[in-house]
Length: 298
Image (cartoon, rainbow, N blue to C red):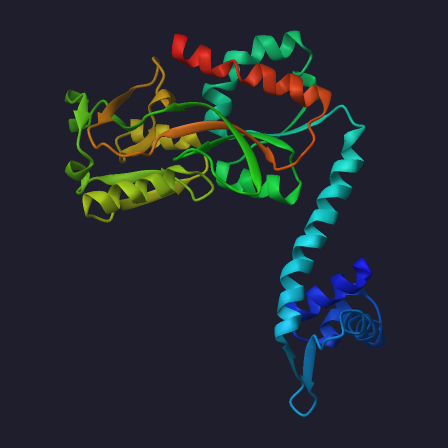
């Protein structure tokens, strides 16, 4: 069974056309046809059926089974190729969400610098949702990720470092300035500014809103924490954010939530399952684990 044959087959299932599959791979149509025939002969079953009168292609039950497994095989081969090509390199392809990069990574920067790890990092900076996909695709190999519950994905291996509470941030001109705690249900008439779907905060906001029985009035979404905080500072709206995001110099009020939900801002070191860490990556993990003590001692 050839990998190219599986590639042709999977794309054929996706587009439903031998002609389109041949164009995609820049080969002649008989090349794709022969690849499918080889697979069918090897497996002793029909994988696709064709209705020439209507130019219609249907994947058989056997074909659907092969497709599900072939997608996994091709993905594993892709990841193996990427990992082998990068194994001899000193660079560490590292995923870092902006909030974690701004608030928590600086706690161990002296240690990273002392161990000459900073210059080894090739940083992919995006929200945790996007970085999870980047890990799975092989774009990055290790990441510090945020999640609203302990990280749980059978395709990935995670070590939790710590967790932090979510809070409501508002302007010093907002009525919340006089409150240390608030129930989320009291915010049903407020305007919300939120991070976009690449960040877990959007999902947490939806959960809190569902539990409180209202749909939040989201007036603006952004990928920038700085923009979000600036808009809140100008009293354009309020935001649900990890409480640590409010620094002493910010003209913002951080109000705790009285709602008892399981959702926390969980911070974890995440790699692909069965990924073999290089020596320098082990050194990075060792230093990142120190964030826990530094957060709780700060």
